[in-house]
Image (cartoon, rainbow, N blue to C red; front, side, top):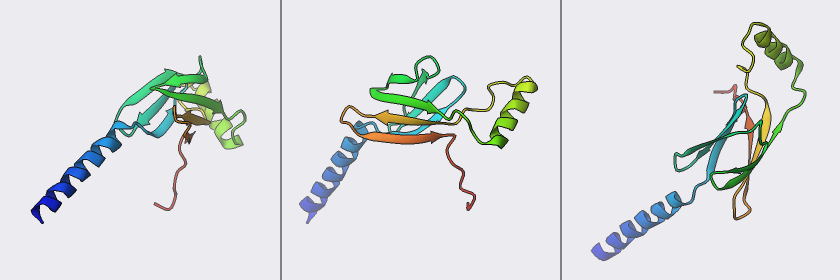
Length: 118
């Protein structure tokens, strides 16, 4: 019984370590110029997405597609902040597609949707 328990603990520890070794995208956020990709390992990778809307980041391929015409209220708010001298303070709306070397695809929207039921 004791050996089975030790084997179970060892197997659990090894499987936990194996899961930690495989970086997986958890979230992606856009600022006016920067794409920030957060991995399950805690690593945060950044790239200037306006200069390169497609490329490689932390060993993952990425592609950013900005929403060309967001809804009217967002356009008005963005225009208002620009008129007040705070241009770029409202992050753009976009979709970020991240692809692993194994071909797994992760899709994120930025800014992330807000759940009003919480």
